[in-house]
Each structure stands twice: as structure tokens, then as C-alpha cells.
Length: 298
Image (cartoon, rainbow, N blue to C red; front, side):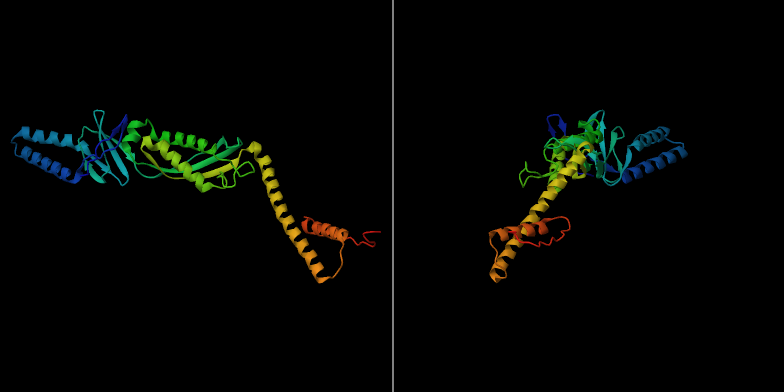
């Protein structure tokens, strides 16, 4: 038999307690013995009332049998009163007057369709998530919530919408360098989503095992604009690196020319040389040489 857990009531919330069911095999053996005894009494044509009583008792006890597979439970109510939840596996027997409600304790997947929401900046984005959840308190799931599966879906959508407003889609100059974004901080966002879902599901007897974003994109109406913005940011960043490298190379070239005394350069010639080198090093197109037949001064 299962251990009995105390029924806990916090306000209007009822927590699960274990039900003490009987193994069905000994009860089945007793019923079979009673049927054999009733058959023997009928065959001897003696004590017909005893045979009838045994037969009625067996018929009354038979509906009390039920089976539970692994990770399944039966919630028991007697005339509308919750009496416990049986989580034992195999063939079980309980009071035939009990009403049984089957509950799956297995992990389940919830894939939300992409939702259009506004991020922290107010930009419309599309976001979807996959949530792995299971029932961990059958009493709350069935007695406190009208339809816990529908409850899980609705609260998941609400949590995703709320989460999206807490983060910007991507980093930018208006954000701190260490600030988490939806695109770059997927692990942090997933942890935040899991915590919020567990808070929302606590009263429904549901536990979230994992939650991950499965879809993240700008809404179609601004996708092209934001793509150009990202491309511009990438080009500017690349140009900064190119210019920084080119300045270093020009500085090294001037320093080596001066050290080796290969050519004497005044300020104007240095300026011309720097200009030419920067054009060659920073240009994103093929550079064609120009032959100067004169000098800088004529």
C-alpha cells in the first residue's frame, strides 16, 4: 500500500495526498474463492441465501478493480469529496463507490505558434517557444483548474508575451554592453521564461522541466528595414577595423622609411603618401595605379 500524505489546504488550494489502495491480486483471489464457494453451495442445493449473498458481494466488488501504468495516477472522489490520489502501478482495488479520474504524469511538449509582440524598444517581433511540462500535483490540476491543459497553453502565451517586452531584440547604442537581448542571450531568456512559467503554473500543480525559444524574428513589416540597419552596423564595424589596421600599417611604413633613410619626406610628401596608402588599404574595390609624370610642386 502507498504511504499516506497529509491533505494540505492553503486558503482555497487543495494539495495532493496519497490514497491507500489495495493490490488487486489478493482481492481477485478472494473474489474467485467466493465464487467457487457460491457455486459449491448451489451445487449442493443448500443455503441458497448464502450463495446469493456471495454472488452479490462479488458483483459489487468487481467494479473496484483498475490498472495503473507507470507515470499514471487516479484521483479519487467519494460523493464529490476528494479522498486522495493513487500513484501505485499495476492492478489495484479500491472502494467501488469511488469516482476515478485518470491523470497522466508523463512529460509533455507544448509548441507555441509564433506570436507577434513588441520588444523592449517597441519593435514588433515574432517569437515562439517549446515548453516541456508535466503534472506534479493531481489535486491542484483537476480540482483547482477547470481544464489544466488549456490553462497551460494560455499561460504559456501570456508568459512569452510578457517576456518579450522585457528584452530588446538585438543590441544597440541605446543599451548597456552587458544587457541581455533576445537574440544574443538565448540561455538567459530561456531561464527567465522557465522561472516565469513555474510561477504561473504553481497553483495548477504543473511543473516546467524546460523552455526554449524556437522562433525569433522581426515582424515582416519591419524585417527589411531592420536587416538594412544590421548590415549598416556590420559595415561600420568592419570599416573601423580596416581603418585602424590601415593607420597602423601607414605609421609603420613611415617609421621604417625614416629609420632606413631611404627617402627624405617633408610634411607635404608625407601627407600625400599617407593619403595614397589609406586609399589603397581602405578601398573595397580594386585600386588602379596612376603614374605621376610630374612632382607634387609642378
